[in-house]
Length: 298
Image (cartoon, rainbow, N blue to C red; front, top):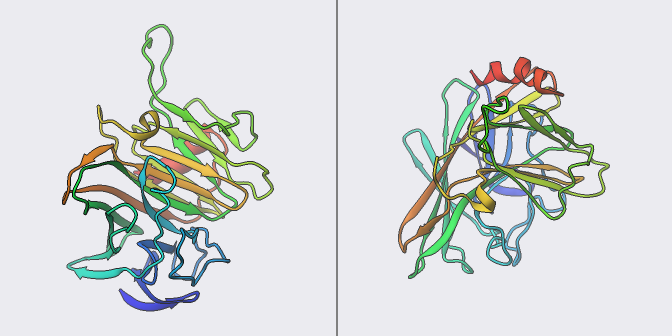
């Protein structure tokens, strides 16, 4: 861990081992603006128009990785994160603490625990209710990925008819979701969403991902995100613990925790683990995922 300047922000923290590095902003946040191999490409999207900005009155799309609370509504979800955060260091962990949001009364924190040797980092996202009343919400962590890649979403195990009569999984769509869009690949076991800088319209779906992982393949690297599925819990957006959104600039890999009624002074946590692998061929179909992606998960 060391303090660095990064692309116009003077107060950032670099967390690194010999395999991976991430840059956490201190002038705004909590936010991770970079994740990748040391000296390599940033796996996250960076909005060139807003890099180095701080103190704005409205929410700013910097890129990187951020923490929100669901469901998505205006103006609550878009509470600005444009002020400095506090860094708290403890044994093996660095915590980024945001001042309490003025418009929501929610305090956001992210703990970062980097493995000493592996290309692995564990993030604990935390929402704390600083109001005098209970708030219903769900933690929602969003990684904004660099353009040109594809998101891979596993579906629950398949089975034949008529021995599998009950429904097996949940898939949520938005008013602008177009299943005929060529960026989608609808496999039997996996769904792919490809980021295309030339696409005219955005796309989004949500899903109940029981396998607890999703991936983003780009420029020969594979970003893997692990997260929990809690059976019988109530999740946002008709039951989704995973969502993905893309437009012509980027693609978002999003995970959600269960919806809770958060009492005053209480906190809810949502954990992700990130891994990064090099020299992984791009998977185009189910067979490619099983050949190139699943071995990395083990």
